[in-house]
Image (cartoon, rainbow, N blue to C red; front, side, top):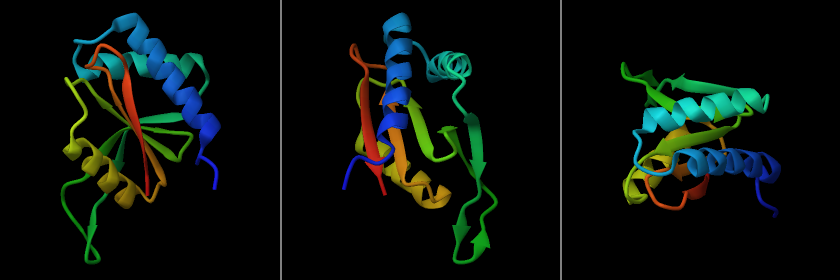
Length: 123
């Protein structure tokens, strides 16, 4: 089996690298999200920012929802971090987002390191 959404992932990671190359590490996540949104618009990439998902627990929709940082191409979740390193709980968060959204791929990207760090998480 090949890499899922290879071309789309390549475009997304390329844009993340562009943002990191220009801003570097140290900003809050919201700054990176604003820059990413600008780059997605410029590249004419279809995306949703802060897309809302309901959580279904045993057939009941829970009152609190989750918001994916970005959903790109209507199928890839992009989770943005600005930390000193990616943690296990960040990966677990992406897995949960994939379960709730029924998407197959999340890209977890961390702008807080000197070199952009990202992980592809597949469900």
